[in-house]
Amino acid sequence: MSVNTIAANRAGGLFHGQEQVWLFGYGSLIYKVDFPYLERRPASIRGWARRFWQGSHDHRGTPDTPGRVVTLVPAPETVCAGMAYLIGPEVFDHLDCREKNGYLRFSTEMTFSTGDHAQGLVYIATEDNAAFLGPAPEPELATQIARSVGPSGSNREYLLLLAESLRAMGESDPHVFAIERRVLALESRGARRQAG
Image (cartoon, rainbow, N blue to C red; front, side):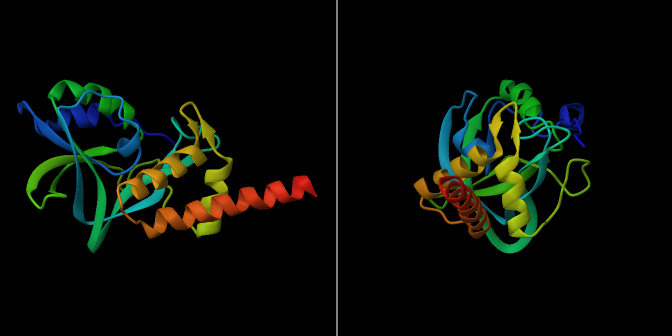
């Protein structure tokens, strides 16, 4: 079930009145940058883990067959790598719409690859939103991702682009890479069956 968080994010007023804000991207915001920014820097946040636990009813799936996209879940001592963008407040209209299916704005401290820190903004879909699907065994996650397609493209593409982007940054994410291996294995088995 989808849930629209645009109004909640705009009413929250997080970082209201600031001329520039750091935005932390950990999913498609790493590789699909369809908004203007002033600066882009590799960064990380502590205490959160990236997981394919959020349903995508509007981008990588449909209301009837939702895909799975990443959100962040609390994980003490875990470091989540991503990309930070310095943006102006005019970008929020676009981002709030793009992240409307359950994601809310939160404040977070981020650490840049240079070691310096900044307070910034991150969109997180928490477990109490209606589109949250929660954990599932890796084979089940891989099967759902391999089959799901939505207005923004296949769920498979989302997964593979994220994994590729993390590798290009020199980062590792066991959860993302394990699901990637399973999706590719499913495709390989399907190709062998067709060839046989």
